[in-house]
Image (cartoon, rainbow, N blue to C red):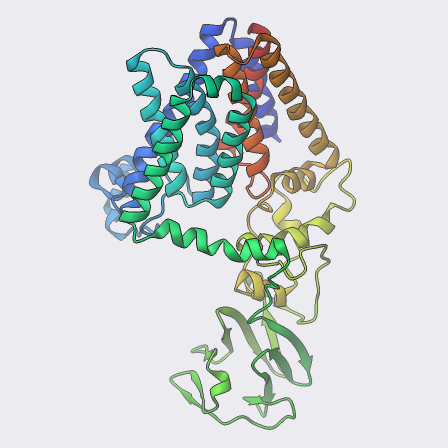
Amino acid sequence: MYVLLAYVALSITAYLLVSNKWQLRMLLNVALIPGMVMGLVALLQYFDMDIFKSQFGMNMMIPSTYIHIKDNIEFTLRSNYSIGLMNNPNYLGGYMSLLLMLNVAFFTISKGRKYQIYYYVAMIFTFIALITSNSSTGIIGATIGLIVYFALTLKVQLKNYIQPLIIVGSFALVVIFLNAVSDNRIDSEIASMSDEVQMISGNYTGKDGLITSIDEIPNGLELSTEDFVIRFVIKGNELELQDVHGDKYVYIFEDLQVVFEDAQFENLSIELLESRGGMTVIYRGKTIYMRFLPDGVAMLGPGLNAFPSNLDAPSYGFDGMESFASSRGYIWSRSIPMLKGTFLIGYGPDAYVAAFPHYDLLDTANFLRKTTRLVDKPPHNIYLQIALNTGIVSLLALVVMIVGVLVVLIKKAYIIGVSDQGSLLLMSIATLLIVFAVTGLANDSIVTITSVVWVMIGLGAKGSELT
């Protein structure tokens, strides 16, 4: 709750702090600095030269009390990925997509060679951070934002067509260069989006290789897939693997691993725990944890707690699209029914994790890859996040405010003429808010990004008065 109040305070402070156009432009210029810094850090990370892995980076991050453990720290960031100064590539992509709107505007209105070079460098580094993040959400949001910005300022861009051509050409060269030096990593990312496109168009079911059911049977569980049906039965204090008719499969135990003779189980891996008190079942990358009981077998969910196997969570929409956008479809489909009863008051700030239905272990395994996986973050959608945390009314209030600011900014820009430098800056703030609204469809609200947006709301409101 204090964070929410701080957002409002930031917006009001930004509005009251600025008293003239020079101050407004100076504050917007300051916002560009993180883009250049993160662009440099992101570029180094993309080529596996993370500054934080260096001696300097270690000393900067780790308190002197713990500096002796620096050699034991492992970095999990893969090559050809970057997070900048964030802890998530999507957050970096979302942040850079916002700053890019300001960068483009300043570059198109800059006068004088040294200013043009400065804003060009800032713009390129921001774009590099965006692309190297591999954030589809950020890239799509930035693309939409740029289209909107150039559409709203079309007359100016046609008159000064050299700068838009420089922007488009430079962005294309950056993409080509990064793709070439990373073994076509960007091509692979584009290809990986084909499933999402097919889901949206209705040509992809997204149900290939799923576990179709897990049912309780006497003294055990029955797991059904598209390849086989297997029963895990406790018989005489021993585990026995049976077919659907109750006949024992042919298999042996080898170093706690179950080895089958039948080729139909080539996508199945079963490993007993050393204590032999349970086992791990993996089918096509989907992991099910089980515990042996005196009279059967229990599935384990978050916290390694036993759950009934037949509990279904309420869902709405996204049938066959659960794996959409890195399983956001699954999370959204289970989050929408949670909106019931949250019109005035939600579950409370950051209470989403506690309210999410984690007991649906079958779909948790299918779409989150592990039955023990906890949805420990907001629903990867700002609108659902706000509605569930603080209520639908609070979401509507925010939407109305952002739409109101957008209308005021765009209307004022057209009144004074889109060729005016001040109006172009107003347009850039407007497109920044539009990008935030777009990326919010698949990103969470985090302090590092949302605080910037609230500052821009205050600066945009003041800018409309000063311009």
